[in-house]
Structures are given as C-alpha cells and as structure tokens.
Length: 301
Length: 301
Image 1 (spheres, one colour):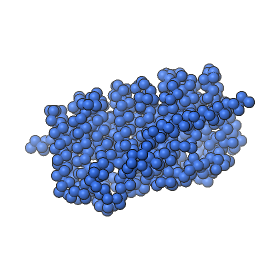
Image 2: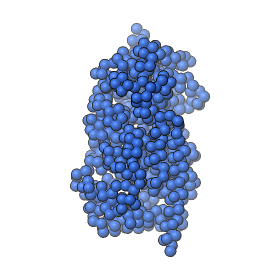
Image 3: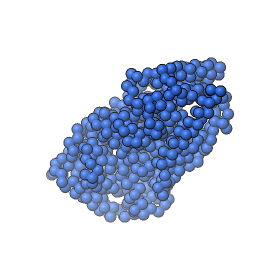
C-alpha cells in the first residue's frame, strides 16, 4: 500500500517535471521562418515528448534536500537533459550505433537526414550551456560558472563522450567486469552523477559534504546501467520504444553477459539498497530520491 | 616599408598566439592510456598545428584595446577556436560537405573514422566551455558566465550552426545577395564577431560602448567570407590546404557568383576600410586589429 502510493507519486512527479523540461525546450526551439525551421523541427522531434527525463528528475529530487527552488532545479536539469538528448541523436547515427527507433519514434537521421541530425545534436549541446549559464538558473554567477565547468567535464572525453569512445573501441574485445564498470561509469554514470552534483553545487554544499550524494548517484548510475542491460537482454521492444538485444547481436560484454541474469538482478537490488542507505540522515525530503532508486531497479520488468 | 613591417609583425604575432593556443589544447588532450587515446589523437590531429587561428588572434588584438592580460585573452580565444575546430570536423563529414582535406592534412573521418570524427567534434565542443568557464580565463565569475552564454549563442541555431543549416537547405536554391549575407553572418560571422565581443566583455565594456568594435567585427567577418569566396573561385588548392571550387561545383550562390570577381574584390576592400575606420579613436593599441583587417583582404592573393 505504501509502496503503491510512492509509485504513483513518482509517476506524477516525473510527468510534471518532464512537462516543465519540455516547455523550456519548446521556448528555445521556436521556428524562425527560414531554412532553420527544419533544424528546430528536428530538435523538437528528438527532445520534446517521450523520454523519461530521469536526469532532470534527479536534479529536482536532490534539490529538495537543500530547499532549491524547483524551477531553478528544473532549468539545471533541462541543461543536463539537453546533453543527454544531443548524445542520443549522435549515438543513433549510422556511423555510431545505427539505430532507427528512439523513444518510440524514428531517430532524427531517419525522420530527417544525417546532416540535420548532426546539427540538431550540436545545437542541443549549445542549448545545454545556454540554459545552465543563464541567470534564471541561479542568481550567483560563481555557482553558474561552476555548473558550466562541471557539466562540460561530465559530458566530454573524461565523461560521457569518453565512455562512448571506450564503447566503440570495445567492439569485438573481451572486456572484464572492471572494464565494463569503468566504461559505463563514464558513458552513463558521469551525467547521472552530475544530475545530483548540480543540486549540491546549487545548494552551496562544500565538496567534502557531498560524499553521501555522490555515493547515491554512483550506485543509481550503475544500477540503471545493469537494469538497461537486463532490459536489452530480456525486455520488450515495443514497450522500450527502441531496438533491443543489440549488445548480444554485437557480441558486446555487458553486466548480464558477464554475471548472468540472476546475479545481475541481485547486484542491481544491492546497489539500489546502498543508494537508499546513503540517504539515511534525511527524512521525507529525500522520499523522491528514494522512489527514483526503487524505480531504477524495477524498470526492466 | 611601413606596411611590410606591419605584415611581418602580424605574421610573428599570429604564430606566437597560435603556439599558445596549441599548448592549451595539448594540455587538455593528453593520452589516458585506454581506448580514449584514439579520441585524443584525433582531436590533436584536428586542432593542433596548421590553422590560421584568426579567432584567438582577434580576441588578443581586441584585448589590447582594454589592456586585457594576454594569456587570459588567449584562453578565451582558444575556447572560440575549439568551437571553430569542432565545426570544421563536423562540417567535413560525408553527410555534410564531404571533404577529404583540411589544413593540408586528411580530415578526421578520413584519417580515423566517422564515429571518431563525430566524437572528436563533440569533445572540442565541451572543451570550449570548459576553457571559457575556467577561473584562469577571468577572475570574475559574472564575466565568465556571461562569456559562456554569449559563446553558446554564437555557436548554436541562432549563430554558426544555424548558418550551416541555412547553407545545407540552400543547395540548389537561387539565393540573392541579402540571403547570402544573412547566411554568412550566421555561419562565419557570429563566431568572428564573438571573438571581438569576448574582449569587450572581459574589458567590462557596457553593451552601449561596444558599437564600434561590433562594427569592426561585422565588417571583418563579411570581408573574410568574400575573400574566402574569391579564394574558392580562383585560389590554389595546395596553398589553401583544402579542396576549392566547391561552391561552383555545387551550384551554390556566393558573393563572387552574385557580384562578379571585380565587384566582390572592391566590396572586400570597402569593408576592410570601414572596419579600420571603426578604430579611429584608438592609437597604436589598435595596430594589431588594423593589421588583421588588412590581412583579411589580402589572404585570397
């Protein structure tokens, strides 16, 4: 009964925050009445509607620990989502993962063309920094430039893009569990961790006070990836809205291929339990973070 | 005699600043001893050595008007150059302009592969914001976050990337001189204008005091594009280090195809003269900006 209530709360909160992020994107992506309309159309196709918006939800949820104004947390979260959307558009390109479906719709290069997809990704990349550096995101310019610096690091060669590169060169290689963990900590973990870190920065938490939240984010990030591998292994394509079984087809090492389905599921549960333990010092203000952790575990079912 | 001295000064200054930008890139692009080394290698290939570094040179030159510390101006300029390099890597892709040579070397997707080229461009995009948001670029966080905001705008759909989109949809269309001017003001103008604007921001010049420098930058940007069209029309491929005569081959409207070679050359001279007139209130501290303006006019010869 309690769990059910928390679940419907999470669903409500998630769709409320997703609508706010969509509205921010829509505000920036209005047609200009010239040849760029095709670019704005492609950007709206990729980023508005559909999408779980896990990252902005994490920023809002972590923001509650430090009483951050929700609309400001949503703006920072939208910047992180913009980086995520740019990476999806580019990763789906024929020269990368060559995917035709994303979020239940044709990928941008399928619906439009490759050149438009490259540019739409590039423009989401700029939008991320335009959003996070805007005074509306935080009144203190020191906080804003700190957010920019950390977002650029989480996104670049020592974060998400570096993980994608490791993934590209790993094809056909026999990675062990340590190498897969390292790869995923960069490819998906860095941006998920920054989603929580952004709230810590906005809450003026000194780096030494961020340890439990970093622990939470790191556990969530890894659990999320294991759940993703489980979904890729045994999920339903129509429900997922994208092609599955890609890793097995490509002969890629995943947590599931290395640990087996049963142990991967146990590991995911353990990580979620640990994530929630990092929040032990908090009361109800951490409920949304706890609900997200439980959701991450259950999303493959 | 005087002009000759100025020319050799410009060449000296340009190569000195280019070496500083190269050193900044090299510092950020060191190998990590894992699969990302291929990414760093591709980034060094694209951004270090070769390249005129016009944009950082403009930031340093404009910085002299406001006594900006040169190393800080170089850092801001390196951020702008990083955006420029990212755009060259992506624009050269097979799905965009499909170019094999750049700065006298094979393009990144030719030397490496397309996926690496997409990621190398994406990582230069991040590097730009990491550089410009760094406290070493300016001590005042308000200035830093302002630089981030304006760089994101100059780079995105209402700047460089928007211009590239206009260029893509223009293929096969009969553009008039107004449409070509508008396209180029976005595609190459926006970033050249920001190269000067960045120095104004760092010099704490209020927007209403920036008019002459914006005028200079706008004139230079347009003159640069006309000179580029002249070079594409009648230049030497080996000297240029890239494929030429592309526009005529693609049936694209350019300043030269619309005005004819002679009028285009006159227009370029006029723009450079106007650019220099915008600096009339300044003495020797504007000499480098004046020398750059004259160089822009002469680069097609």
